[in-house]
Image (cartoon, rainbow, N blue to C red; front, side, top):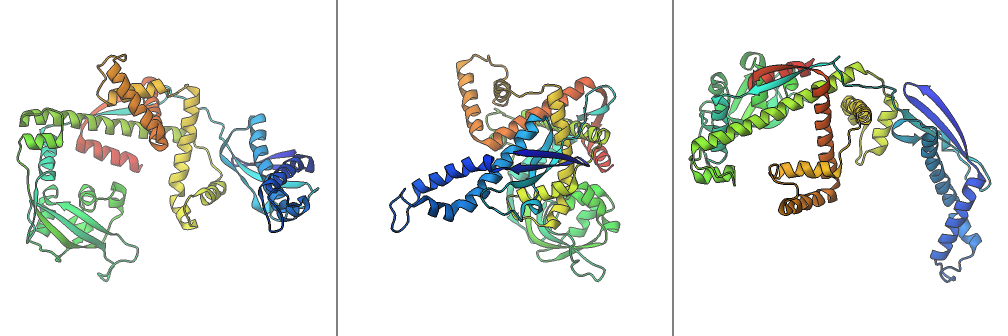
Length: 452
């Protein structure tokens, strides 16, 4: 087996492999003998089909399969032996091998394209400054949360017309300059809680009935981006791109009668929390909001870390190789248009994955089974219990075994725990500026930062 490695530039290389008869013939002969033992044909007992006939029937396909298998194994062995770091998997250059003459005794040449791993050495240090947001809540947040709970568990009755206490389902359609449905424009079903809209927008819907239409001009009626995201349930970036006129056709109107604040509601919303009155419920809500805000703050911190490192280590990836990889490795049918549409997101995700793997290696970030069990112990509410408590140990091991059997769930857990380690790493090594904000200020700041 002969090899010829060639770097092409832009993180791409090729590896030519020549498979000789001495490489493939023992494999082919062994495989044909195996076929002969198993196959049966009219006029021959199983295992008694003549070897020449077996070779005539299966020789060429076996020769091709075994040679390609040897070449594939050879690629990975060569990369390992020569300590060549790469990303994704090598891909065969089909144009190079499509005219092979599969004749016993010939040499067979294959070429593989290889995406090389960028030579970067990311570090966590004080050259980075990150903002860590302390998102504070007030009683208006608690009131809003409580109202949402009461509405969610309340009574829904059909209503004739819309008022501020209604929940509305409708179809939104973007219009063109002729007030017709815009080709390729936004078209979606939306769900509206009227009391979340500004009084100005509520007026547009007030007293409307089923099948009636609300016409909205984005610039005139919805200049506020927050209101656009709320009404159409879209992202901030999507809201920013909106313009022109939209038609909203009312489909369903439901009048909400909020649930009473009683023990039945407390047990429905937070079972096992032993909440007995409204003040205890409010305390529980405050803790829940605090936990949610801390998660959002941590999520933004991690996003800022990723953005900073991707900016500092701005390496190129072989675009055509990646697009071919997506096309050939996709489990479902995928078009060139699909690839173009999702390529930018895929490239950015892969860049971070490369940087992340470098950090994991450099700082020896490992998630052990003991780490996972400790994490599960906390999730199960046993954080204050002794590790050697038999009941706790048994329950944690049960959950661990269940998750271990579910590969995707296990991988997601390890990935999340790895993210937590990287966040902790940059919290420790980088310069941190603390900033206290309320929820609305946080959302506005995040939207502004994430757009830049």
